[in-house]
Length: 141
Image 1 (cartoon, one colour):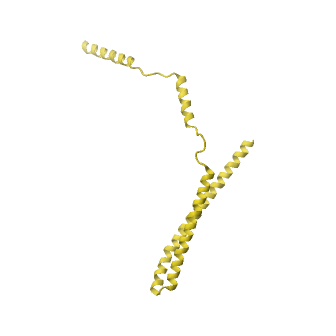
Image 2 (spheres, rainbow, N blue to C red):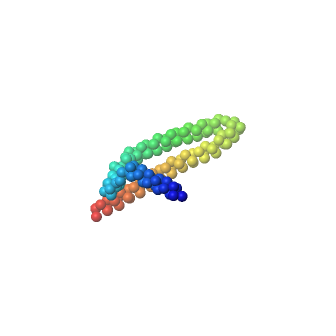
Image 3 (cartoon, one colour):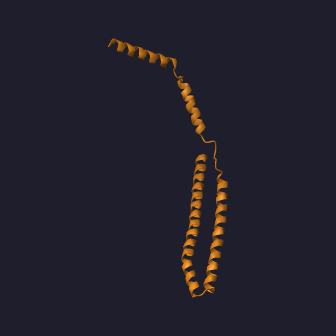
């Protein structure tokens, strides 16, 4: 029994010596605080990454281009369906009448999407202008 206790004591002393020999670097409180400040400064924004005016211009240009394409496509398809209806036989007129429902639904969906897009952009711009005016009033105080 004494030999087991002796072996355990030697093993504990051996572990303590290993821990003492391979101590980790200890940091002082000031080093920890400085590291924390450096970390926080790295996380602070440098500035606005997004150029808001350029984003608004791009969105407006994209809206105009896509709306123009949608109008052209809908007018061309509508004209084709109209010519087919005028020049077609009774059977052709029935096919054109069947094609009108998807055409009308497509026009409603496309132009509804453009309307929602325009409303969302206008609401966003209005709220941005309101926030900007509030910030200017606070800065003047």
